Length: 284
Image 1 (cartoon, helix red, strand yellow):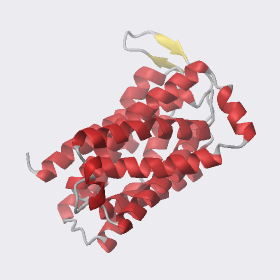
Image 2: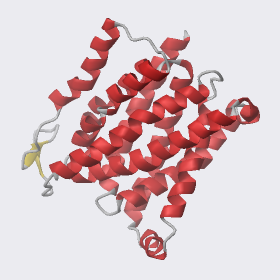
Image 3: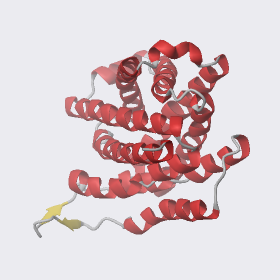
């Protein structure tokens, strides 16, 4: 398998894992805060990424990443895992997984434009057509929830009353798009000459974890963490594992393929989100 095809396969695996995370966190933020969700999912990811980097042999090659590359990765971690993830979870809490995923697709054109300008990546007319389809196709799959939704067996399941806060969701979704749209550029700039995406992910996660721990270290927030609902905590931890897998596949894909290929495919995960949310979250 050539490097571009490997990048495509990794991007699709990342898209599916991101969708699992969206569905899990959607349930989790019904009893926890977006800040708690961001902290737990990042903390879970740090040892997992370090283990993956060690097993792959990339950790032993850490000296190959330049000082500038380390700065880029740290900045990518803060932009993506602190700003982007927190804002995404706020949007998810406000409007649900399906709409939050669609709003986050705005990060794709932003990332591609930045890659064209700053990384000199080429995008053909056919690629632009595919990118636009991947961005806008999920919009056709999103519709307003009815009061009752049929199950596969033909019966109905009464839904919990959920009133989307559209303005709040769109505003936080826009913030998430900025965080998510700029981070691929920084990641690609740091690891494209080394193909060490897993180590890059570990560094980015560690930088984000340091910032989040500092933010959540206030006594009141520590008390809130200790008082978390156990079911919500399990959902956050499981969501942390799923988003780790998503980011592992994403960093690996960006190590071997251009941003203009990887990011549109990952954003196509909105299709997976609709399907997974139907089976996991249709009652909420």
